[in-house]
Length: 169
Image (cartoon, rainbow, N blue to C red):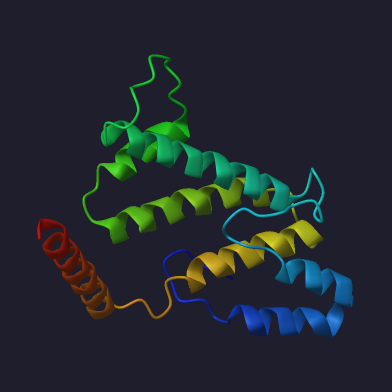
């Protein structure tokens, strides 16, 4: 059982290895093709959980991009009142200053969508696909360290300072 916010009990390699022991090679290959970032879902079919995940994730990423563009004054505010529940969640998420916390909140939103998608999927390929997506969501947090974040921030700031110095000359 995977739980949001906890370390996964196994990694993707172990999961796929376990699947390979009981499932046909083609099925395991399809499971290994699943990505968190939407990709080509033709192999999965229009009504599959993976297709629905890719559609939802693409729409969510588009909403995030539009929200960022508006707040950076790169796009005018839309006068339409298209405030779905996801839009409201995104607005709340984007109001949080800490980018790590925003990403955790986005993953919570993703997890809730997977809960809805999982309903009625018992012991079938879609259930395995949803498990794989959840596993990948948890795996992306494994090994993330606060110190590494500070090091990355310092590197970015140093690169910006070098860039500004070269421009001002």
